[in-house]
Image (cartoon, rainbow, N blue to C red; front, top):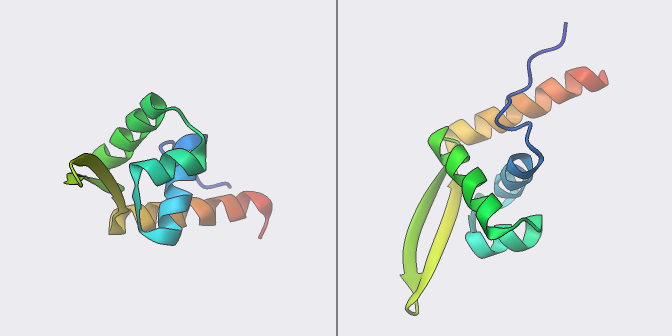
Length: 94
């Protein structure tokens, strides 16, 4: 029997964001925007969903008088991502 895949991570953009953050742990909004190729509006909505789930934290500050948004993966986010990857491996028979 296959394990259920986390519906929050089953979205391509949210999975892309989490995949990036699992490698770097912390990234700016601009970095995530560039790497995912998503629109500002779409990525903002998906980041908010990940934050509400406790998978990431979002810090808003200023750098040289410009807004700076930094996203960090949480311990809960790391665990959710690892469970998701393990569940996918079950589907692939690995």
